[in-house]
Length: 111
Length: 111
Image (cartoon, rainbow over all chains, first blue to last red):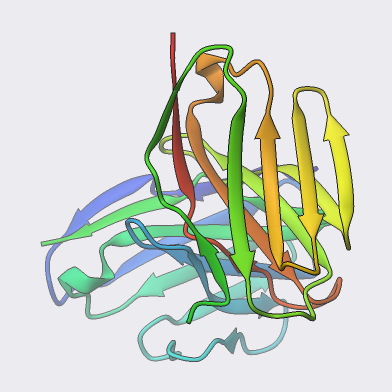
């Protein structure tokens, strides 16, 4: 299994600002994943983060809007930049260790 | 058409009832099928994992995959109030490919 923690657990932010979400895993993993879960919708993969290389973004997501850092094998950050109300969502960090495990999520509300 | 379709519910049943949750999909290349359970304000946790067609049982939970019909099911026997959660189906083509999630079914078990 994998134990994943995220900070913050929730935040309310103003339009136009940025928020950085942190993800910490209990032991080293090669790939970390960032998902978005909008109300009533399925989990959508934003990007895959490998340590020591640029993140790989899915269609519809760009680095300028969602910059990702992966400084080591147990930690990653996702920044939601220049936020709008449409960015209100739950953001989840995930790793694969045998199976796929998820963090508790960061609930973001943009006003 | 979405790759994975799942009735969002909500589904409310009395305690002790048998619950049936279902997903349909369009991609015949999907080989791995999962069910995740997500409690309120928590990340999804893996509940059941099935490869290809057939049934898999784990305690009160049974997962069924019918690849000919592109249809998967999760049955919960002797349902308990603690089973109240959102259940997400998920699937992927191979062990290395991206997971596609359903939108989740919100289940409530009435005491």
